Length: 606
Image (cartoon, rainbow, N blue to C red; front, top):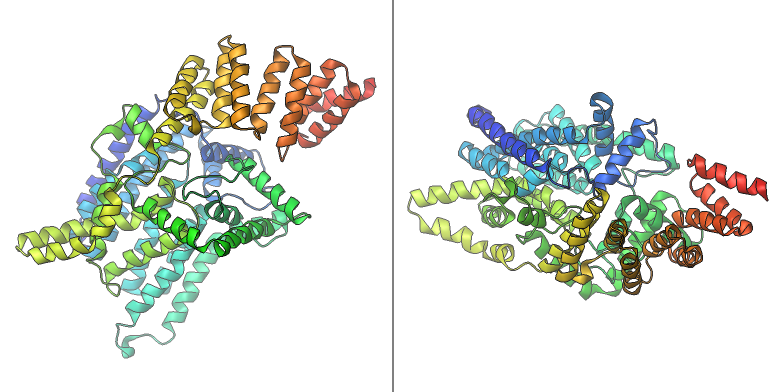
């Protein structure tokens, strides 16, 4: 079948996909998002710079998946610190994924399915969008596509080296997104079902064990460096990372909504999330915990919620499935629907969306036989769903599922076209009618507050414009968010708007905004701390101290508050209090040499 693969068309699809992504990156370079790394992108970039500066081993086990930051560090080492250049590598990788998925579609549905699969992939809006983000999603799609192709190759040839490569690719996927490990047993189950179709005399004796051992060896070699790092860093057994328990609790707690909703008291900043979730667990347990114990703590809390609220959990799981199969791209880190609507880029073109892929993919499911070659796709799709439904759903969490849906959609197009050509309405109606429930889920009104999402997009722009020094635009974005949905505004949005007002010479309005924020978020240490900092800058030091004390009381992990209180008490001439908070701040920020000198100076002066 490999001889039938249309390589000339594959090259054309690759060039077309790369051209579309290149056009998008050229436009993206002029948008405010280009140098404003949000959430995970910021964390990955900072982590990569730490690695580049010699900190190859973290202070503890990996909290996030490790491949992407180490890739960034290697790129920066070879090419210099040019984050935008990484995006061009991602455009190349994503274009390669289009060709790989053509190959998958060809193996599952025949050579004629390859071109529609490649074109759907080349013009799929979320894939194009993610090439412009300093995040791992592009590599997740490429790695997972290669894994699917390697499983099909194992089925066709059943050689040990193919299984070894399959395991290694699964390991690469896991280093990018650990939940895909669940796809390995699903793939083995499908391969076993396929093997049962062969006559007993044609099955190599011991072949299944050799295959399993080869696959396990490839998988182990890929993830062993991560496991070794974790043991060296924490003297704890953590296979890849230890974020699983907290992520599980995020999707299974009384406040859970099925989308990105963080529990009260935990920040969405990955570095703060890690520290705060660890401190919370240690405080609850009354002792220092290893990373695996932190994860287990949160997993137990999530499990307790499920046991105590089985019907609510069932409803939540059904809602997550709806989120997964609905056309709407739920924002996480970056807001694709908002950016598509408000900025003139390639994303405004009439591109392929999940409305198309989800609907056609649903039809494609009913053209598959589980024990046939095409049966791999629904098996792996079901396994991927099982790996994310216990957590929560967003556009980027759904994106890997498109690896299975794109070939299914291409297969559906080909089979429907064949049936139409043969004038066989039954062959068209039967799979389409079977897919109606999924198609209705896909095309129905989104089960989320789209207005809230729109407002959140303006809130994010508030922070981006503020960081870029475009303070008037920041205030304008904040006002638009507030007019749309005031509840969408986060403490960070309010703080950035207040900073912008202060920079525009409207300090009293900034303080009033902070006071309003304190009413909405009475437990926000960020608002109290930043309000205190502004009062300190305005010379209202005593008022600043009161705000900073509230910040210390509400922050589970004070740091900046200690430093600010040190400077405030120093200005007030209260040396004892200044020394107290100075020592706390110095212990929290040992790398701050100026702070260390200031603390030593005031201690000496006493």
